[in-house]
Image (cartoon, rainbow, N blue to C red; front, top):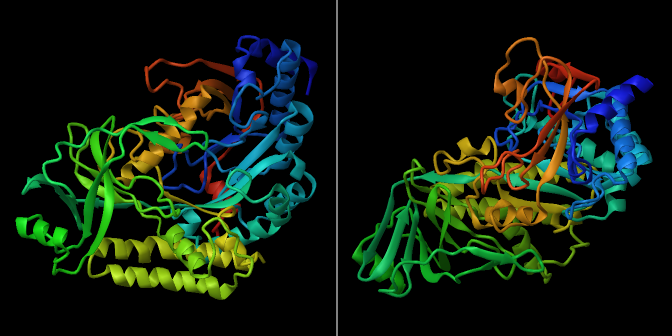
Length: 550
């Protein structure tokens, strides 16, 4: 890098505030992602624009020199993972071919650690395999945490596009886990350090909602779900809000909710006879009856109901969210957010005399088979009362759990890893961010608006993200001589006519350059003179630039 280039970048960086350096969180190596996940929270484009090794050196050297001249330290002003940079946002860093260079520069030039989150990479890409082996062997000290994400939306997992297959995706995930196993063990398993995260498709039901009173009891009916207040004449449900988060990050609610009886039955109808028989335990149609606590919550789209919206004391999760149609919310319906995999793991451990947080060191492949068999039996048991949930288990949950199990065992991991709450993390259904909006089929009208209590805890007004305050992002921008659609460039990245670097402040709740609560635009700057390359999606796919490419 020439002195003139460095000087030019330093001159441009002089305009950015200190916070752009001290509160920097996302130093993205590229924009765009070939995986094309339908639920992509960042609405990534399909083409790739990325820093070359020379571009990385130019940018990181200039950032380090500018920080030193100001007497500040990169990424040390954040309360969330201070001193750690995320090399991704709307990209998958596992398929970035210069990640080893990035890691070295992060350590040796910027003096920071990095975090990796990826769906894995293709075993057929020899260069990527060699690079990741070098990272796992020689550069492990740079990493603060590594998370591998398993979702049903990655192109390789879906396996419908030409040249892709789920079997190859499973083999590629196993290949990734095999290479990184020594480093993951060294980092220590945990959701924040080293884990496989499973995020499932949502079970969405679009149906008319009956919201009425029968014999004094508040009654809700949507799809197969009938909820009846335990006490008559209790008055309207108050709105429940998160008042604050406690020391463990758990939501403290303004209202405890009210006791209701939850009847699950495709055949049940909201009539006086049904209400009487259900409360008396005399209902004759095939059903399930569960006591729950019902809350009325609210978001930008209007009020909604949630039954048992958070974890049970024993660790199980069975939340049911019911959405009335409103002026903004086009349809009524529900999401059944039950975490079937997590609940089955806990049941299996309990049957072996283990508490929910206990490790299961004696687990075998037969125990994994039992969990999969139990999930299939659960689907069978749901058939007479909730056909949609039964189909969801068979088509969405069991196949993904099977991929995870096969990948772990193929990579040589012990069966105990499958049962480890620190390594196998069931995060539940996808959240309402980015492209996930259309998967919610009209129950969400506002992108990035929390749809559940758990989402409200994560990125709502009284949330973990809110407490962290504004953060900063540095990223290459798409450059092209012609106008390209957002599907190619991505929704977060304004295209330019020459290689350009974006430096922008973000609201951490929705990772956008606007404060969601006030609508205030946040600060934005650009740099030129950093080397960026453009890789068309077709070229990346031909080079096996994503897992599942066969």
